[in-house]
Length: 198
Ligand code: C5P
Image 1: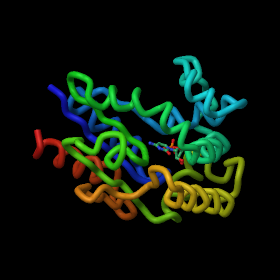
Image 2: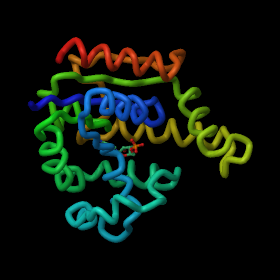
Image 3: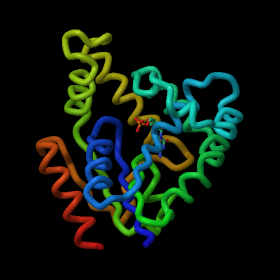
Image 4: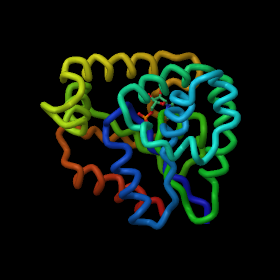
């Protein structure tokens, strides 16, 4: 069976948590496509070459989740040749046998417009920055809340404003706004959408 769940949305809206929960619940494979761009961003050198020669070791680095890696990822993600180099792998993953969940920015619009379920997970910039701040240790975080909020807004602007595959909801995406939802409520909405289509 081929069945793709495309989950797009801005940074720290809850895509990762929802994607893992949906994949677990239905036994689908999961691909965090942001990790591909993060790995290219932190690898250094020519980003196009980095994207063309990405290895499993690059994806296993333990510094991919840092704020710096997120910023570096969104800078290399504007380069059309970088996106092109990562396209075929993501498409194959999306249509693999047994079902797949992919989360990112352009899954429902560019990578897999034929996805059976498309979700657009969003939340206010303040809530997303607050979650990121807590994740990074709250008062012990390396950056103050205001810096993290500024970075969230800067990354949103770059991801939504780029010419190639900008972040936007697919026309047929179900929007889930997690600003005032608990994780359990957001996951329940996503699971209900997949179950209804299966
Ligand atoms: O989702 P995550 O925060 O890990 O993504 C890091 C960056 O990678 C995003 O800000 C975005 O610029 C880029 N990205 C993208 N397309 C995707 C996934 C991530 O452009 N499908």
